[in-house]
Image (cartoon, rainbow, N blue to C red; front, side, top):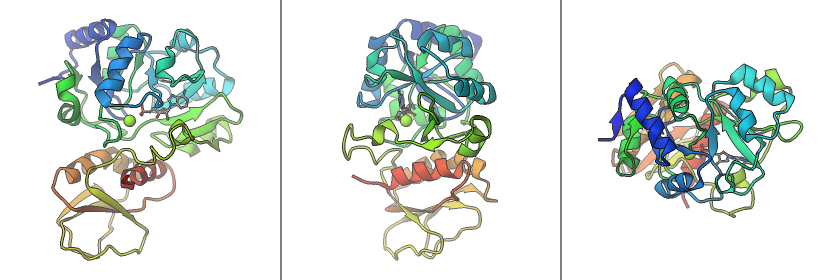
Amino acid sequence: MAIFEPTDENLSKAGELIRQGELVSFATETVYGLGANALNPEACEKIFKAKNRPHYDPLIVHLASVDQVDDICKEMPTKAQQAAEAFWPGSLTMILPKKDVVPDSITANLDTVAVRIPNHPVALGLLQNAKVPIAAPSANPFGYLSPTTAAHVEEQLGDKLQIILDGGECDCGVESTIIDFTTEPPELLRFGGISQEQIESVCGKINLGKPVLERPLAPGQLASHYSPNTELIILKEGESAKETDGKVGFLKFGDQNLNINVDQTEEVSLDGNLEEAAHNLFSALHKLDDSNLDVIYAYEFPDKGIGRAIMDRLKKAAVKL
Ligand code: AMP
Ligand code: MG
């Protein structure tokens, strides 16, 4: 059993492990992370190996406080500073020009680095104890559903880890929003915990950019991500599901109903609350995927606020290669 309560003693031990170049999984408000000392390329190599993650997918570096940005980034444009003031600690990741201390192997050889200050006492406690920046993607095998509980991590990567710091269910439940502040206007590269509307209210107009993984680095490889093993089909409002002899799962939001017989329903929010749906999304998909179903259905989510982050995850989960 690799799951530990985040006591002072365990946080201190975990910080020591990070300094020694080992992996630690920890709770954040978005999803559980798989962390290593960001300034130690051999340690970060263990992340890529444990997740089976390709090196063209760069890592996010987590910091304990905003004054650490200066240690790893060449500059922080005014809009990035404004965003930091408004949303950090929180689920916003910023792309900034990197300093040479950041290993090229964790940025896919880009001259920029992704940075974030997480808003969770376990993540912050670990960062304070480790006293180094921590590179951490989600603690799941590459391409599979993200983990939002310590049990999800244990199930998927437990045999590769000495310690998973338990912080309960992740509050936000979807990954951070990623904004590239090296361009003007800044570009949104991934929908996430903080909505485009919230960011624009602080930074002005944001363009929609192409995420690293959708640029022609690795053609055709990465439309699929966050995926259950079971087939997932997304229906438009009013669209019907096909009759089937197989077992059917339904990811239900608000008062939606499916037109065919459903064997298992997971409700992400009874009263149609998008924040609550994001919080429950991956847990519901994990449960459905563990239930020997033949197909999972979901309806499209509203195209606003965190609904866009949910739809982004669902669309990528529905692609089978
Ligand atoms: P995650 O898998 O949640 O850790 O998210 C990491 C994602 O951040 C990557 O898949 C990239 O899309 C994005 N990312 C990380 N570093 C950079 C960078 N330097 N420039 C652009 N996007 C980045
Ligand atoms: Mg991930």
